[in-house]
Length: 418
Image (cartoon, rainbow, N blue to C red):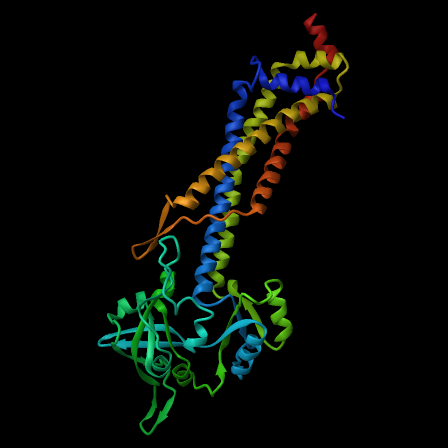
């Protein structure tokens, strides 16, 4: 039980000569704590926003889950697997992945080409839909043309906006698609596999790197370039339907398909995802140093107070207050300043982030002249982590001042006063 006199004295030391509020000497500590908390909240929330934004772009381009065979193998009988997934309330689409060359007139460019079944792929990817007419949404989907499934599967191709621009092609243009490998035997020797395909659509993936490298063709043409048999694919893209169970999706699929590997969206572009996670951690540590600097100010302020009021503290010990009571007195001061700073920092930070979320004042260049709104994503765990870290650093910062209290000799100070 805390002594009421200790609480009273703690409040008086905070007030100084003022009857209410806190003294001017404590304002700098309070501002430092507030700014430190605000910086931590803004960094973590913005990095969460980037993570969720990247997730939406990746899952919109590909899907949320992927079923892959063991390394070096392909998925056989994908039709039966897709049927099984549909019975489990999942959307599914087989994909064949090729690295091909696209040639139009004198321009030759490499492309990561995905062979798809257009009708099925519409259910797992946003690339085959028209983008939403909302300036705040990701521009992702077909920006020109339209995919007619039958024509697309036989002789069509869809190009990323950046890739189409580099090739200098538009809708209806015929381009030469060829394999970089000379693996087709003829009477004249080995030649590359070649197909002539018409541009049916141009899409935006929401990621400049994807727009400049990705293309889509029919799965039959992709099987031709990969020398695959019927009903054979590299992997199957999977997306839960609204009626599918939303909990433990990965575990459900692993139990249903133990012979295959089940990958989530974070493994589709692991380098990018790892970079975002590391950047959030690194930025949090950097901003944490700002809070630690504020705690140094608190430590110095308490040491100054103890030095100035040494005689007064000695008299309090002579009147019966123990070292523990005096430590509680200064610890209450530090915790009060920390609490007010946390509330102020979280409050101001939340207001600024809400303004950004609903108005989109701050924008960032994404490359190619495109700009995106600085994303914001609130997570309760970040708020909890910031509060815990703030109190922990505050408690550590008062250890040195509290040790100084043990060195106060009440009898010696009273003798000097007399």
